[in-house]
Length: 78
Image (cartoon, rainbow, N blue to C red):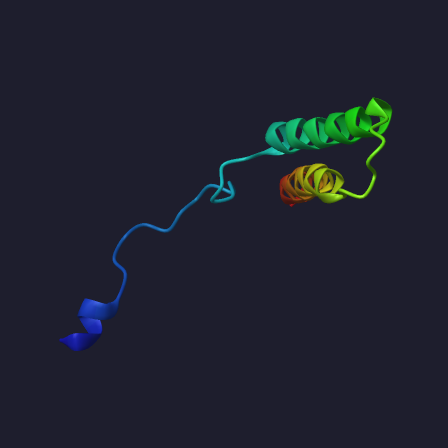
């Protein structure tokens, strides 16, 4: 009786969509936003280069966008 309670009786998910819902388009948008932020920070020419946290944040957005787009494209090829 206890074994039957612990078993999952729901249907298995059939979609290959990640839990966060972003697909290739979302990854590309994130990568473009991150690249635009980095470009804006570099071209702005601020004299205080000691604050690298802005570059770090923009780099994270770019990296996450590249990872999401890349893994979505690889999942499509399967």
